[in-house]
Length: 124
Image (cartoon, rainbow, N blue to C red; front, side):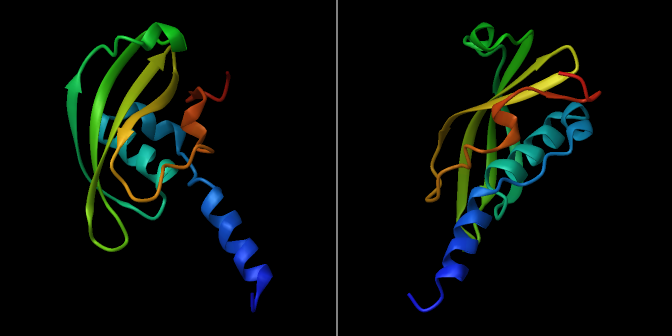
C-alpha cells in the first residue's frame, strides 16, 4: 500500500455513521426516512418513502408502542436506485429503526445511532 494512513482513514470514515438529528425523527414519516438514510447510508440520496404497513408484528420485542414498516427509496453514488425496508418504531418520545431488508451493494452501517433508542427530549 502506498498510503496506509489514507486507507485506515477511509475505513474509519465509512464505519462512522451519519449524524441523526433527533428532533427530525418526530416531524413526519419522510423526515424519519431521511434521517435513517443519512445514518445508515450517509453517501446515498433520499428519493422517497412508502408506508408498507402498520404495526410491525415484531415491535413488542423492541419495547415499541407504535411502529410502521417503510420502503425507503435511495440513490447510490453511481446513480443506481436501491430500496431499504425498515421498521420505524416509537415509544414515548424515543425512536429507533430496524433494517428488515435492503438491496444495496454496500450494506447499511450497523453503527447507526438508530440501532438503539434515540430520545427527542435528550432523556433515555
